[in-house]
Length: 279
Image 1 (cartoon, rainbow, N blue to C red):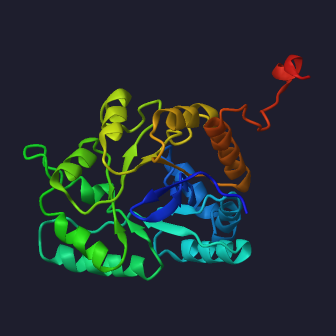
Image 2: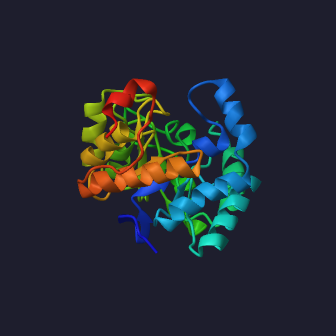
């Protein structure tokens, strides 16, 4: 069986290319109509077909696992078909009001994720970034939630849209083994210039997962992935969401070609205006 280039999060081996979930769950970052299209067409059977393509290429790390029936069923189908376990990385959320009830809800949410086999647990941006204090350059109050993750035998990480987060967490010595950051050549949804985020990633003490590398479909795979793979460190990762087996094949081949520094072998689009370019 093939094996895509790998890295480690703590002691866990993961594929450097990760399978995103936005295009399975209906978060297009484009329009409500497109969200509805995804939600109404991406069932467990179709998701499983996409996962199988990734698994056969050694891309076995699933970014955004959650205890949602269609995802649980899709993962089970793909694993049974290919004979390889999917590594589950979750980005759960819970209220961050500062009340004691927050911790009770966090325990319930984390128990549910543990029960579907999550290996790496990174509180979602809406949780993580609520704790970021730019005055003290710390994340005061997040420690109990990281401890809850560790107590459930999951590896703690932090999902963040703030480029400060990895640096603050590193400086505070938090029990965090990986980070995610929005990172793409367009600067789409990024809080500061691409060059600044690039420097923040380079300074992070733990591996970083680049999310939205194609800017939610605004960049083609060649353009978006060429930027990501060429500017990240050798132990960083890229998470990409797709909605069909064909797109999965294209992402895998494009990534491998870029990492191996060879021409990308994918079929190009055709139209009458390109007929003069045909061999």
